Length: 142
Image (cartoon, rainbow, N blue to C red; front, side, top):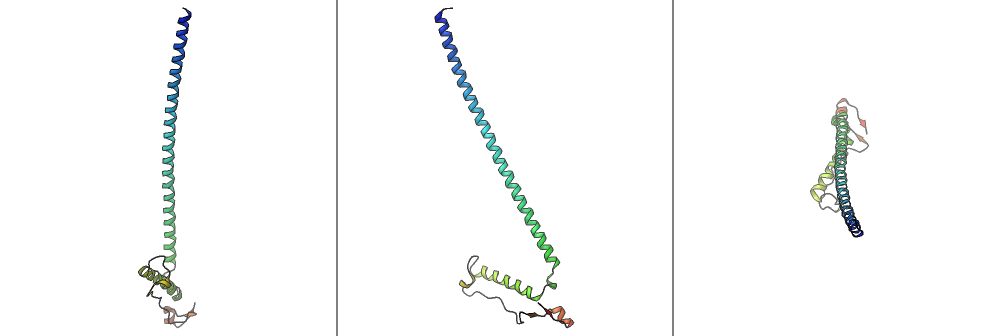
C-alpha cells in the first residue's frame, strides 16, 4: 500500500465518518421530535383529564348543594314558615319577575318605567298572625 492509497483510504474514511455523523444527527433530531410530540400529546391528554375531573367535581358540588337545599326545604315546609318570611320571599320573587319583565338583568329597579313594587302586608311588620295559630286563638310575634 502506497502513500496515495493510504491518503485516499483516510479521506474515504473521513467522508464516511462525516456521512455517518450526519445520519446520526438527523436520527437524533427525528427521535427528539418524536419524543416532543409524545410529550405534547401527553400534556393535552392530561389537560383533558384535569378538565373532566374539575367538571365532575363541579357537578358533584352542585348536586350536594341541590340536595342540601331540598333537605332544607323539606325540613321547613311552607305550612310551618312564618308569614313574614313568606312575604319576604314573595317580595324577592316579585322583584325578580319585575326585573325580568321590564329591563332584564343588570338594569337598576329605579330606572325601569312602570316597575311594580311588591304588595305590602296590611298587617304591621312587628306582629303577624299565623293562620293556624289564629284558629286556636293565639298570636305569634315575629
